[in-house]
Amino acid sequence: MSRPLVAHIRLDAFRHNYRLAKAAHGGRALAVVKADAYGHGAVECARAIADEADGFAVAMIEEALSLRAAGITAPILLLEGFFDVSELLDIQIHNLWIVVHHRWQVDALLAAHLTRPITVWLKMDSGMHRVGIAPDQYRATYERLKNHPSIAQIVLMSHFARADEPESGHMLQQLETFHAATMGIDAPVSLSNSAAVLGWSGARADWARPGIMLYGADPFVGKAGASIAEQLRPVMRLEGGIISVRIIARGEPLGYGGAFVADRPTRVGVVSCGYADGYPRTAPTGTPVAVDGQLTRLIGRVSMDMLTVDLTHLPQADIGSRVELWGDQVPVNAVASRVGTIAYELLCHVKRARFEYSGQTIHQETI
Ligand SMILES: *Cc1c(COP(=O)(O)O)cnc(C)c1O
Image: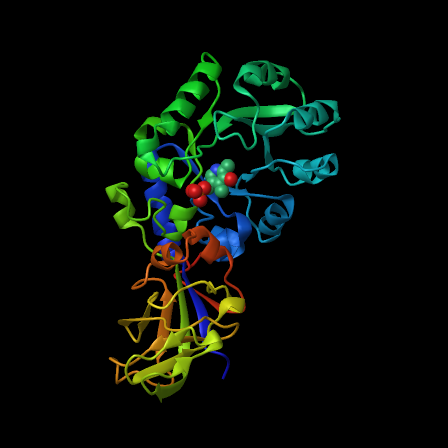
């Protein structure tokens, strides 16, 4: 027996979501699998769509090399490019694509003597103001790279700051800036993250870069987003078990700080999941959980290895009952919004759980 905390990863849902993203956007789609596929396991997720994915995107070369080592041969884009010129060797050897977002990278790339030309995604700062080449320097930077023997292909790229806030108008401004600065340049374009794929047909281009939607979480979080988001399937189901049950009397405190005090006799279940597993410590009393398929609530403070739930109305629930922390009945967005964060952060932080994968495609080995 081992501690009952399992992250069920449904790879058939991942594949379904990738197809949905690609169909919604049109053209080609890089599956964003940075941060170990948002906590789901990058190798397993990438393998699950290896036969149909147009490519993958990661944040750093270590992530790309572990995909290559696992047999992934599709294009892999490094979303921040290289951090040091010493990475250029592996980038060539392993045929990686790189984002170029700063002048120092352009200078370093053009000064390096590459034996193999590299595909560059030239990133523009069209209004997010985090990374990217300024719009008024973009064309000149493109011209410097174009026709240089070290550069294979150039993809024109930008990223939206507020694609999940259609009402802001910010995205339209970014689009206008991007189009004005790239007018007349004949090269493939990539603009859309998940929120833009789901909500903004105006941002469609040659390449989409969906991330969170592949894992089944709606970036619009219940705001008037796109109906297509309803077709997303959650990939992770985080499930703990009840390891202890007790009844506490009215007026008795529960757990650290006595943060919860029973206002009636309360049947308490202790669940094998805590903040060291990635469940947020700030989750308040009332955060939804599902015990053997029935919705109830978290009560008291989350501790490192355990949390407590209300079983008062669930007499069948007992030691061994299964508790969904998030997944199908409890959307990860529902937990995230209770604690003032986003699904991305919760999913990335899952650890210590046993990861169980289902829904792999069986690849026929040819002899
Ligand atoms: C992480 C990332 C994405 C994916 O964003 P989602 O909101 O998860 O779809 C796309 N593009 C870039 C540049 C990123 O860094």
